[in-house]
Image (cartoon, one colour):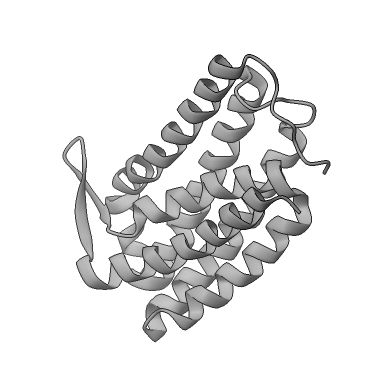
Amino acid sequence: MKRYTWIVGLALVASVALANYATARYHFVPVGFGQQATAGTFFAGLCLALRDGLQDLGGRWAVGAAILAGGLVSVLTSNPTLAVASGAAFVVSEVLDAAVYTPLKNRASVGSPRWAGAVTASNVVGTLADTVVFLALAFGWAAILPALLGQLIGKAYPTVVYLLGGWLRRAVHGEPVELARP
């Protein structure tokens, strides 16, 4: 297993703990465009982008291990209400993200339009799942609609940064990035 696989996997698990900490500590924060979201939204979006990167580097087994570890960290690093909401949202969103990303990224190289489409589609699905599950369990169903736009905006930032990094990597090196086999 490549050294970068471990680094990305640990960053994914750490971002789960940071999402829980930020939400418990800061609650709702501005995310731009006049919207607010839970403070952990940025880290939750980072989880989705890192999951895609982890699959590219280490394959589905690495992703499965990270999802299990992240779910456990989520439960262990939160108050009881956030633990259930965060753990369930993390596992559901990451599994759905993987289910969309895996077939779409087939034979795509990092930075290519096909790869960008796979990242975007999977992160939209993962973001919606994470938002609905987390908000419903943590704050009740009535919290979903008022917070939805802010959550989508906050979780989009890490995806955009990840896409820009892939395009920059391709522009600088001009060759496809070696991807792990599914």
